[in-house]
Image (cartoon, rainbow, N blue to C red; front, side, top):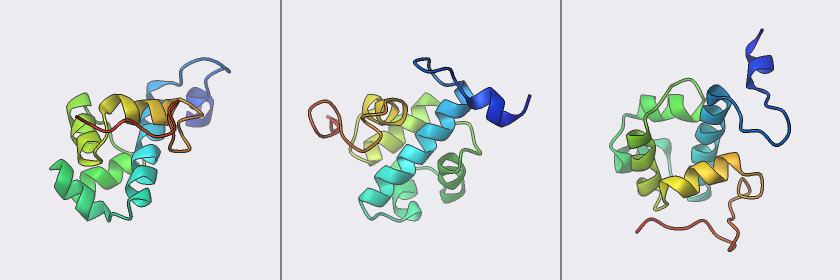
Length: 105
């Protein structure tokens, strides 16, 4: 089985861990770009290396919940908002049920 086969989840099911990590990385990239921030700026705010963040955004690096929480907070969002935006189709466009993603407290 190749990655393309493994990563595709049947309709209505959660994606595999690999597909979810890739979707989260792409969402982080979209959120960063929507703020017109460089990858260096977000990496500094999240206290992670530029290379590590780049690999997360490109789906080439695993990350912990702790690191993802730091990235979310650096984006001024909650961890749940970032994961929800990555995994929920209506949120992937940058909105939430209320119209905007919830900000971090």
